[in-house]
Length: 294
Image (tube, rainbow, N blue to C red; front, top):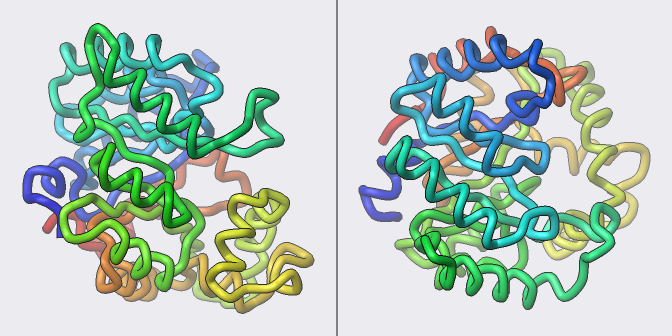
């Protein structure tokens, strides 16, 4: 679908984790070791979750030698385009071709400045273009869900990094993006062969996202209803937006996203505390089962 150069940069499979972002100096060594292992395992990209800044990528790049490091995603309300462009240029000089800038409009309850998200993103991209050291379109991806933002991802960025989406959304996104833009959805997985236990873990985590209209509006477009959003999510919703089971079952589900048009999957292993846990054993087991490169 995408160019070989773009796909080669991201690989087929990456790891998405907000636990790889920290302000705690006591955790930095542990995180650096985890990043180095992800590099050694052959994953294509580390996606830093938890609304990171560009600076959060620096220690991960320094701890690794090959893997791409991406923000997944940087909120345009929290960082000025001028600062982002300058910081990105510094990373590019230190680690050429290994940083990808993931941008998003976040959510209304997380920023007092939130408003006109589509127009604000267009203006932000123009500011990145006009910076003294511009961020090229091929160096950035957008957290796009709806058709307008997906189209913007196609014409003003390397492609899209949708979060909390289904296989069906992936197919629809590919239609909007065409054959040459990157489509790199995030996929939450629970590595647990017990369906009831896996759904409990998934439901505990999904409940955090269900009050956010950006996600629920997108899910409604896909055919879900208000009833699916109650009590942490219906079984139907959980099964649509999570992959659960053993490593082979996860790989089979990942294959469905790839068959629907995804070029790359950003795998988020959901645990009891995914904002702090570094599930390295799970990452190892999945590395043996998932396609890591084309």
